[in-house]
Amino acid sequence: MVVVVVVVVVVTTISSSSSSSPSSSSSSFFSSSSSIFDDNCPRVCSCFAATVDCSNRQMTELPRDLPRVATRVNFAGNQLIVLASGSMTSLRNVVSLDLRRNELEVVADGVFEGCPILQVNAHFTTTLPPLPPSTNPIKQILDMSHNNLTNLNEFTFRGLETLTDFNLSNNLVGKMDGVFSSLVELSRLDISQNRIRVLTQFSLRDLVNLRELDMSETNLKYLSLNVVESMPNLFHLKISSNDWYCNSSMLWLKAWL
Ligand SMILES: *[C@@H]1O[C@H](CO)[C@@H](O)[C@H](O)[C@H]1NC(C)=O
Ligand SMILES: *[C@@H]1O[C@H](CO)[C@@H](O)[C@H](O)[C@H]1NC(C)=O
Ligand SMILES: *[C@@H]1O[C@H](CO)[C@@H](O)[C@H](O)[C@H]1NC(C)=O
Image (cartoon, rainbow, N blue to C red; front, side, top):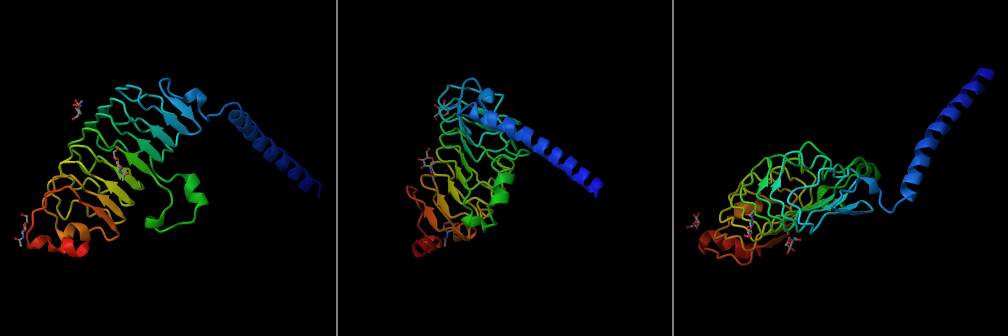
């Protein structure tokens, strides 16, 4: 009996001391500042809550020391030209990444790969019950609209398997084949104002959860029914401002709309 009591006391002491030290340090960590990473905020950016705002800073390259705890990161309106390999690896918890209005031309193959960027993290997976992908309430957003992207391939966006919203509008992308092969959870895609011209039945076939697609102003002339049928969950398709070539192979469109 005595032994048991001693053991209990020892265990209680260990657990209370081990639980008190991280909680007391984290409470002072949070109460001392409005941001959870004041010390880590890149010098040119401002940080609030878990948001890092580096927008409109005339940056030509990414800051090196991006804080790991950030969930929203905004690089919009800078002069970034290259997303180099490894530049995203510290963004472990990001659910929204805004790269709008830069001059991105080069995106290293797999720059989003190998790091859990834009992937559901432990916090989300343990607190939410599993849901079918198309009703997944967690939005994971990547905005690369208004850049100078031309050549993308099947490796460019690897690692973005849980991305839900992707905006690639206002770029110079021509070929789309294979580019979206990793994006199986994607629900909204905007590829408007690019230079696509031709989409084959392989171009968008991996987008099995896509619900909304904007392909307006893409120089498309012909769209085969196979392309649309390869996206079984599509319910909103925007294809305005293209000069459609009209022959009998396009009649399905009239019926579908
Ligand atoms: C990107 O495109 C814009 C508009 O077409 C152009 O003004 C700019 O010079 C381009 N940037 C680079 C780095 O080529
Ligand atoms: C994509 O970005 C463009 C330009 O930044 C914007 O006008 C458009 O509304 C965005 N698309 C979606 C689906 O949010
Ligand atoms: C309609 O035009 C497209 C594109 O030029 C072509 O692939 C298709 O075979 C044509 N369909 C018919 C019935 O001529």
